[in-house]
Length: 215
Ligand code: HEM
Image 1: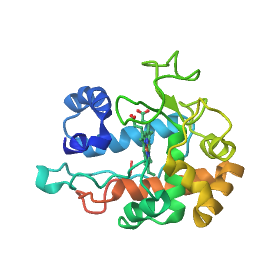
Image 2: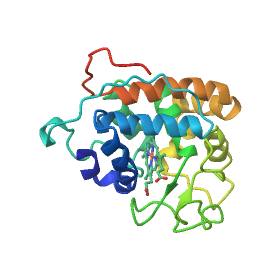
Image 3: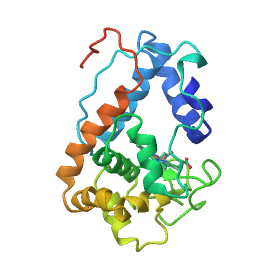
Image 4: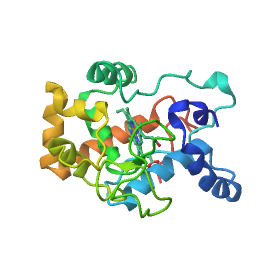
């Protein structure tokens, strides 16, 4: 479970605990596939697009198969747009992918005790659902829609989170073209998000069979 060792993934252990029972029941499915299946299913169930996923990922057998620490994006680097490009271009993703993928922050919350970012609680999170607290990017943080882009554009609600890397998508002239488009057109966001998510989910994975399995 090497991805849990990355400091930037603090909090993922909770997801692992939910998935462990399924893994015990269906031991033939790799953890890598279960994580990807859980993510794509959660997005679809939350109202998001159908993602053209493939499966058949082989789990890593040890740390030597895994990327080193420090390759995930930092939320508050000195130059956020440059940093995002350094991280995502290295993986073969482009400006459109970066902006579309940032829209995943339409879901979920940040917790100061995990990442150091966000408020301990807001009017949108103090009642839960689930464990209360943290700061979300959108009021309805269990709904996958384009509200992330609308909220970042407006920046009018102190209770909603805007990380420096989120702000960058409306500040950088190339990112901004996509951010404006997604704020105005949810279908365009869903279409580009689905493609970018599938691309990201296939990176660095070994598939057996090599062409993957479509379900
Ligand atoms: C663009 C660079 C990114 C940065 C700097 C970033 C940063 C962060 C930070 C600081 C948190 C809060 C973690 C916590 O306190 O628990 C977070 C949460 C989250 N991120 Fe990102 N992220 C980025 C990209 C992405 C991408 C590409 C996705 C998915 C496609 C994503 C999906 C999420 C989700 C769903 C949460 C909420 C988790 C929860 O509710 O527990 N993020 N991110």
